[in-house]
Image (cartoon, rainbow, N blue to C red; front, side, top):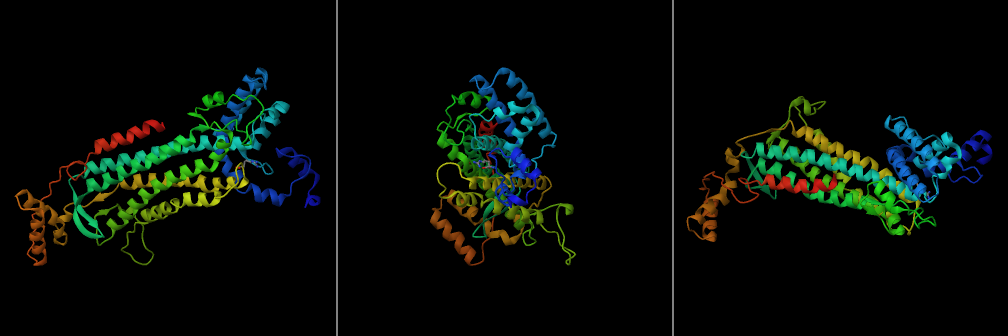
Length: 445
Ligand code: ARG
């Protein structure tokens, strides 16, 4: 294959491959190993520049770069950052990844000084630091999107707190519930998922820079300084542990995403069901529903079906990562690169689902007086048993009395619902749930 390459191609590759040592790489091998990186790495570009800036400031402090060199490198990096911010940054054909592209651009602009920035660093800790900064931001965005939906759900919970609906167990009518409880339940459930988001955030918020290829460096790298500059909580101290965090961080983020997706997918299923004509508990304006090509009457919940499907797929993320990284030997292995293919689209997809749920719920119509329908009569049996208990009848006797009435078809519900304890229909505790959410959010910001 090498002989088919023209001289120009060979020179081109020799200039653009960081690890080039004078022989030309096979194009097929390069394409196969680079995979989707040239596209995916664009999302890391801004973080790569940020990491490089911190690294070279540190190199200057320990005497591996002069102040003069730093003064020339920093503006050049800022220029690259501006190119990235304008959306004009590209990873050229023949350049392996974002790390190579940034170094190449610096070298093109500044010559030999550009070649100095990689001292005491490997692409292994470079990609790690990029990923940590990236996931830290993505988790912030996820937390913000979760919170937007949370606020919407809490608002709806309060707005519809007095509208009763059937509660089901075994998908059989069970006890009175309310839209206040239903909306509020998903809000509180999201606070549990946010604990997972916070845990992932804490794991991501540690500095791997300085671990180099995964075994440190003979240069006296000041890792505390880069930790401070990049705003990490602390370093990932042990250089091997730092390298091990590639995979571990992704699995933590994936678990957080899967947790949120599980709640959201559940909500989407409920909406599909409540929208079913046999229930008819909720509806949406026509323009938010979808039609059928043959049945003229259809108003379908496609949005929530797509959401349910996406959320179900997102729940396979931890599994996918576990299988991808199972039994990898200690230290860097190129397999790790493939985690980007899995994780990068996932964070975006989750945020899109959360925002779509928020948008749809901002237009939801809720039916009132659902429980007046006689098909829900038995939903009041426990209320009536409890009423007898309050009047002095032992619970088991009261239970039998109401049970016999149901059996003999003489049961006549009183239809009065008065639940007052914490977290029940009449006492939703939404303020305390909001406090729980805010406590977590304060740690992610
Ligand atoms: N694209 C690579 C990745 O994501 C960058 C690190 C390459 N390191 C190496 N030793 N080949 O893993």
